[in-house]
Image 1 (cartoon, rainbow, N blue to C red):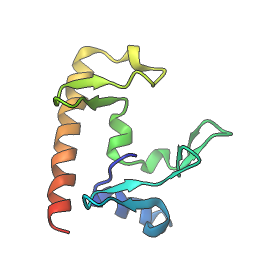
Image 2: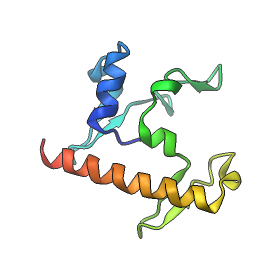
Image 3: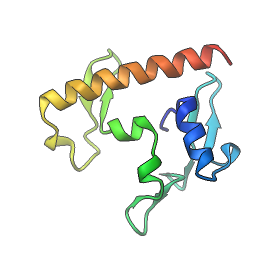
Length: 111
């Protein structure tokens, strides 16, 4: 499940969504987007797109770039566009992802 920063949660709340509906709080105190039937709560499988695309969390913007268990930048090979991201863009998204995860971890420590 996609991890969420407080800023992402607030942005989605301002769009009229209730936190208790779209957020699942982990035992690690990290909020994540709720999945329904294997999909993100905001994904519309019939239309094949996100209902909150313009307000989607930064982690969704950065995807399919991710970090592996060693912290190395990778591309999720489950994504159909996995092979289309240039190396320079991967590095930039990787930097943004590390910064986002640091923010999420700091926020979790304060909960």
